[in-house]
Length: 106
Picture 1 (spheres, one colour):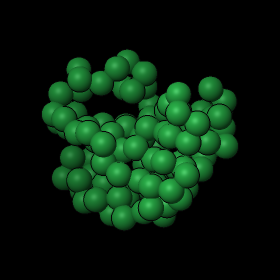
Picture 2 (cartoon, one colour; picture 1 turned 120 degrees about the vertical axis):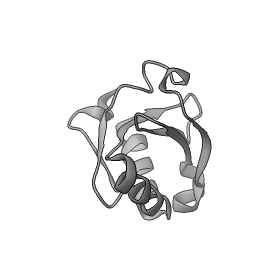
Picture 3 (cartoon, one colour; picture 1 turned 60 degrees about the vertical axis):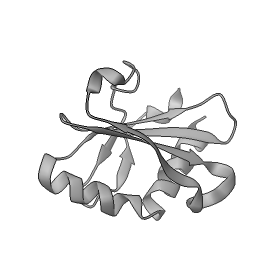
Picture 4 (spheres, one colour; picture 1 turned 180 degrees about the vertical axis):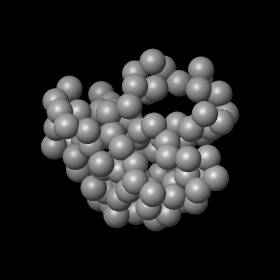
């Protein structure tokens, strides 16, 4: 699971999406980030949440860095599960994700 999560973060960071996140962060601040494995062997969810909106990215590890896409977005944090609202990663001002220590141990 740890490898799956760290690979998903690498693929996200290699995609065009950090630039979008950095643009939103300039207006809304740095988001809370959670990286969650799914039941599918090659899929991971990345959730980036600000006070005013959130984005869920799906990362398909089988597709490499091209397998990152926006799967959902919303404006109410209550639309997210408690697990999705629990940060286990950080985002820098360039929109790059960094896993928190021990977060890949799920």
